[in-house]
Amino acid sequence: MALNQLSEYLYHYYGKKVIILLDEYDTPMQEAYANGFWKERAPFTRSFFHSTFKANPWLERSIMTGITRVSKESVFSDLNHLKVVTTTSDDYGTSFGFTEEEVFSAMDEYGLSEKEKVRTWYDGFTFGEWKNIYNPWSVINYLDTKKIQLYWANTSSNNLVGKLIREGEPEIKVKMEDLINGKTLCTMD
Image (cartoon, rainbow, N blue to C red):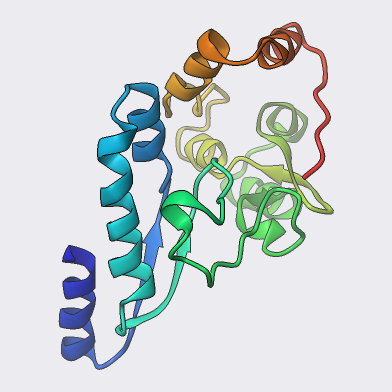
């Protein structure tokens, strides 16, 4: 109930409904699954989502980001009013990173000229029909340090991937080996 109550306090203080941004909503769930305490975590998550997003009269809107696809079952069964935007959606495609035009404009402003190198290192995201979306964390760090290097590595956990490789079906292991060996994996959303 903490975010529900905080929403109420903010509403009464500012006279406006709140906007809640929940980044990496799925990280605690992945960790619970990978480390064997999913049964303990699921009821809390379900309750948290309900009180924060569904039964919160002081909520204007919210955004939840994560890498795990939202399912209309289990912990999300109570959230029947979600709009799911995935990497195959055109909606908000340029909101998840920087466009090439934005990156090159920022580089010009900072007096930086290694555009091809920056493209090689930090371009590569595609959201729906939007191509050439740059990694925002890497671009911001590059602009700050003026050094091209690996900024994104080791910023997240790979526990779920490890568990899937160790315990998953043989097809999953073959697909992971193919990816490690530089092959392409095509799936349908």
